[in-house]
Image (cartoon, rainbow, N blue to C red):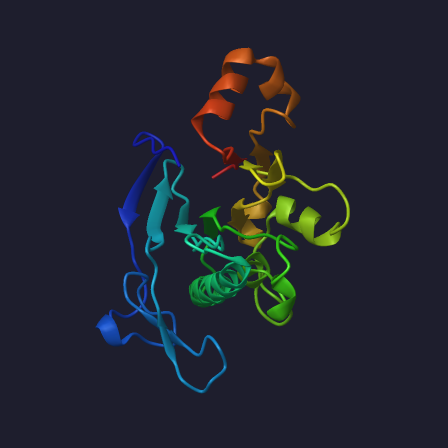
Amino acid sequence: MLYDPDAMTVRHDPKGDDLGEGGGRNAPRFDGAFRIDLDVDDVEDLVTFSKPPLELAIKTKAGFDLHLIGAHLKSKAAHGARNRDEVMRFSIANRRKQLAQAIWLRQRITDHLDQGTPLVVMGDMNDGPGLDEYEHLFGRSSVEVLLGDKGIPKLIEPHAQIALSRRLAATPTTSRFFVKHHKRFLQALLDYIMVSPDLEKRNASWRIWHPLDDPKCWDTAELRDALVTASDHFPVTLDIDV
């Protein structure tokens, strides 16, 4: 996110109780620990963020107040696995921890939405609907947890909604990785800007700066080359009237 001091003022505004190393079950501070039974063995585990989500209170030049959470959830990749069994074990363990982080983040989201706070949740969630064979073990992706289910207030993200409604058809993508053993690139939707319904109504317009999918990015050679060179993820932006 680019910060223009002439357009807005920004203040670090972490929420939740600071419960120390012992953690808590109800949306503690993101630099603390979250207590949850990850493997259904009736023993609570302590979950932490290696990159705690950033929470900001923002006031725009026009006087509009909103809250922003920037998050980077745990990768599901089985780094360090030496054989097929370890790949499976590491992948499932990483997905469990990522899902726990999503549940923790969702508790904070629900708190804000219950209070009527205009909210943006954005970042690399390292997940999307149907991205790996282990999702069926948990019933839903971390992105679905963040967006919200029946009976709780929801966030809106049009690219995620397309992916959820077209599991076997083409969907938007925000990243492109080379898979050595397949000798080809894999594209995935991992990066999101989720907003509360009140913000979506403010002429919200999303864009993925994917040089192979966005014609204007492709036609601008300097931009196209820069996007491919800079990262294996592509920027997602949101234009909104606030």
